[in-house]
Picture 1 (cartoon, rainbow, N blue to C red):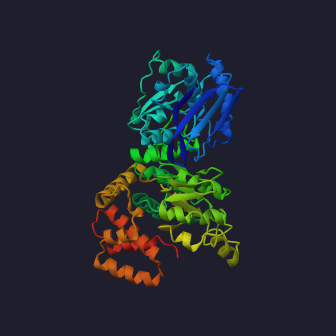
Picture 2: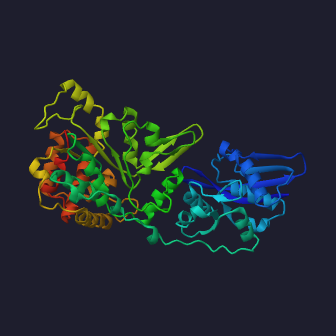
Picture 3: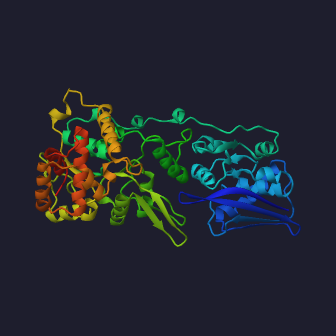
Length: 504
């Protein structure tokens, strides 16, 4: 007898509906699995066989053929266990095939018939919805995550027996609902507060401008000057994520299996800080079947590269295309996958290998050649994609012990959110969320330069030998500074401040 049940497959974050076709016929006992499954899917044969028997059902001693269609899409992971078990029970008359065909099934089976949670449930549920299937059965552990998908009825199950009772009409499983507000974690709760930063007024201002416009930031300073602390404070002054932004980040973390227990939604803006020993594949993403890397995991948040010159050349140069396009494409022989990579890059480094070039108190022991080689590891094209570059000087004793309270992240965040609202009102485009995302043409259209600002940028273009990209980024930063000041036009003082955020 033939039965057909539904599941899903992912190619990156793009989903496809999978028809699990189960044919049980007379013949020598055998369990064939076809349809381009990987090793983890092929192992499902033993899990399904044991789970069906231990749950009290009859496993057919016949020839079983399971086809995962379409056969030209690679299937991976343990998420097909539940669909295959349901298909076998339907093909042998132990469950109603019509009832089984109304749902998509996602879940891993344990040997005793329990249903375990799996990675990637949210993008799989969204894939089912996009393909016209609006009822999905998922593991109970993944219920909250799956319920974030709007317009889909999610039915959580804990075991194969629990599911069988539901499909037979013997057990009522209400569609799971979740209120995002009840599982929302405020973004500022996980970030350092700017009130802990003493001195560093220029750096604090640069953080505010970077947050207001979504600009990339690069800091150069001696060891212990506070670069890492400043970077960690940035996430605390960024605006809270919208539901759409949160859903984008949650899909990526779900696919990577990084959602924390009890917190099925990424509500705080991601802050990723990979070690400088990270490989290019871990940063960009990769593998035989490409998985998201640190760049994509930082989507809608911050990617912090401390000791930036210590990263390999391949890692640093791989950042160029994602910074420009907001996406990262991983090409393999089996597939070409595109992941979102709308990040704010924050880089930090010392001024030289020993860290004390230009320091007022300690002498640098590096030769000019060593300094040039060290800083030369960060290429000109990459620096050209960074909007704001600043020096972070050593703190004096008086600055470090100044009793005057520093401005808190909450106060700065209020100004940042006001500037972001001005940008949204001006742009009116859901795909462009801040000034940093403007194209070159849009930057010139929206930056209403006063006569003084126009004269200043004309002279600066020649003096600083700006590229076309640098020119546009200068306009975007000046536009953000004007937004923070509440000015409709970009004045000369706004452009002059933007020029200060460049390291020649």
